[in-house]
Image (cartoon, rainbow over all chains, first blue to last red; front, side):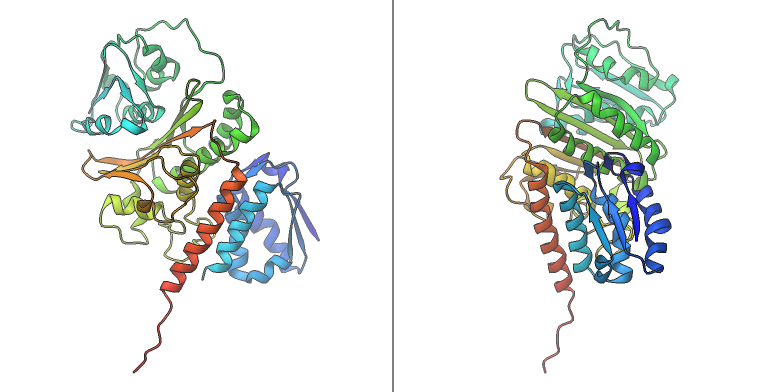
Length: 96
Length: 317
């Protein structure tokens, strides 16, 4: 299992899309390719933008299908962050 | 170019100010102002600063500003930004945490630092901070990613104690919304381009539903939704077009910005980039998580409807 602690990279407000893309490309995708499960740990993150979450996970859903969500767990998300993640996972599954 | 700082220009009454901007003679900038009083939204100051960045400082003239409220312009850093002398000696300062002076942001890293640094300046409660940093982050990232603005984004904000709200202005001298949207969609007018840009799921980077791996086409819709739900003003001006969200029923979000109570114009002087102004009331700020529920519902519904509209229909013969 790969455990990715986001707060150490993003600080309390996760908004840097470049960082999100780097984490996806360099950590999430390699872990998925090894067949590992992933924990995205949002502990201490107070807020996140839709853009950040989109850059972090949308391409995973597009390329691997919604089943990829069975392999990713979102840990310690506050209510706001949970809702942002749900918006992104909803519209990605409803898209082409 | 000529710009006149009027007695009053806030989002609700900004149209005459915008109509009065003279873009002729782009090598020079002449700034004049109301002699008695100047009370303007940060978006106005950001516009003047953005114009100033297009001109060498030696070609900027600023008539001596006699208005008693001119110290506001000084505090917001306008003269420093333009590289011109104000002739004002500022001795009186408002309490800390009441404004964010004009700031130029060109890179993603600068934005991240700015977001971190500005929050303590505003001295707000955590629940009040959420929509403000969200709005600034998404709008400035839009500029950095899509505007091709050599001068980056020019940002300023002001807190008004009397009305307990924050005004934010974010401006760029980039290519404008029409050019960006037309990379993937058809917008014949600047107003149509603004309409598309405010519609959830529409991005200039792709025609594909859901966007690209990096852009969803949701940013401006979120900002408009934050303003709508909190009964705040929101404006976007690009090319010759202005869209202005007016205060209305906060519990009804629309995917199409033209279904919201609004005003619009398409006969304004041509602004090459994009101007965004937003007010955020701290009295009426709806819980951010409630707002996200509303956004989730309308966003999903819109994507489904758009997808369904593209379904192939069977040929019955």
